[in-house]
Length: 110
Image (cartoon, rainbow, N blue to C red; front, side):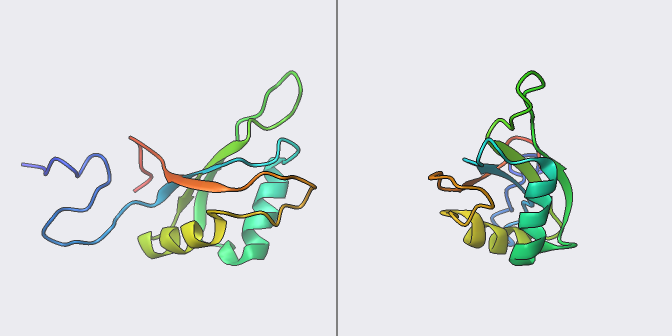
C-alpha cells in the first residue's frame, strides 16, 4: 500500500528525506524568453542539473506569464535551486520583481 504522501512528492515520515524535484519559479520578468531563462539557470550554476523547463507564453503579446516550472535532477539540487532563486533579483533585464520558489503541486517530475 502506498503511503499517503507518496503521490504528492512528500517524503515518508520514516526516511525524513525530501524527494521533490519540481519547482515553480514565480515573478519572472515578463520580458524573459525561454532562452533567457535557460541562460540564467546555466550561468547561475545549474547547467545540466535540470531536465524539464516550461515557461508559459502569451501567444498574442509574446510575453511570458511570469512563472516557469523547472524539474531538477535530484532533491539536493532542488534545495540548492530554492536557496539561489527564492528572493532572486539579478535578472538579465531591468526589473523590480523578486523571485519566489514554491513546490509544483500536485505534479512532480520524479
